Length: 301
Image (cartoon, rainbow, N blue to C red):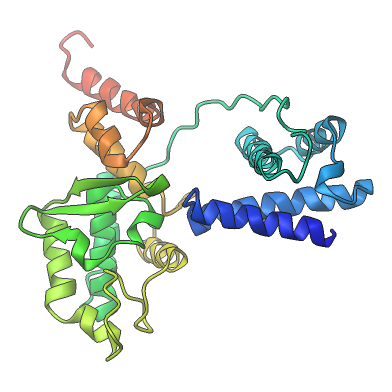
């Protein structure tokens, strides 16, 4: 890949960070997708992004299908490259977008995985030690479950964003959008214990206070990667089995609200979804709950 290509990718990543305010986690995916496409270009003898034509884009998509990728993964890669070329076109670095006419594969509805309430209790119990790290971990998981925030949003929370009098927190979401989310008594108590009773101060270990809510073991702000590592460790400690990922706590937040009677619009606002369709995927989870309730309580079931 030549210097022109390297500078193009650097400019695009800078655009995602500054103008689009994408999370580090999302940007990593974009980098990997463009890097994979660059390897394809090298194999085809294509020297520059500006030399890619529609036929090349079609050939690349065919290769993705041959790799037997999930439809969602293939769709993401195509979307990434379409956005990349749209940026290059805007900057006058290419004359056309070879991915503009590529049709993305339709994805089937993916049912979100979530923890049952008893499984959430196991996660909380796994953080019941009195060490500063355990107190922090409990506050972290309680807050994630109480608010449904994304890991990327949680990493940005500062002390000034929390209002204990009204039990609300200011969450800075995607695209610089902000929303206020309430949290309950369990999260309130866990946060108070973490902040007021010395655990956070002890983790700072004499360093200057940076004002971020969650602190790592070295006294610095807890990053997205750090939060994911903590969640993975706690999940393993709770001896939960199956395919588990940190985003399941956010899924659990939404599913449990709907199961207990919350309306869709409220859950949409709490999650920070721009479109109701993003929230409606949780109805496929709650339908099973409704069916069981019906079978257990209807006299003619």
